[in-house]
Amino acid sequence: MTIDSIPTLVKQLYGIVNQLETMFPGQKFTPDGHLVGSIGEVLAAYHYGLELLDNSARTHDAKTTDNQFVQIKITQGEQIAIRSEPDYLIVLKLDKEGHAVEIYNGPGAMPWKMAGKMQSNGQRSIRLSRLRQMNDEVDDTDRISRIR
Image: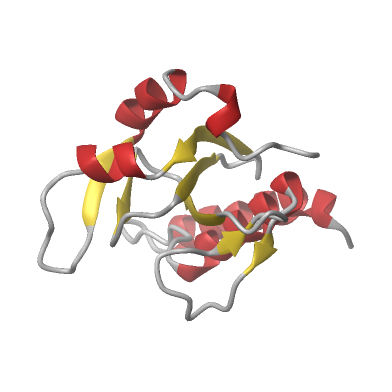
């Protein structure tokens, strides 16, 4: 299996989710948390040529070949949450076909500044619509280059 298998596997996962939700009406079996986060991290590592850090690393999930530190976020919803200001931020949206679409790719300072107030869980949320607007303002020289 290769990275190209991820869309097929995600589609299978959503097929199982649909079966469970049919079997148990009213219950939600949405894949989230570590599962979706790990999918985002391996996809970003592959597509942007990143080296993933240990799962316990604070703030950043990966680094570039020239040692720029990157936080990777992926969601199926319309917002993400961040705990601290990353050097760089890549935000992806995962669709039910298993494809990840880039929403934001650039310095982490502006998304951190524009995120909502700190919640009781230590996170600040920001909507994907806001990130898309910010992404339009990022200069290409301030992005993590996609290599695949």
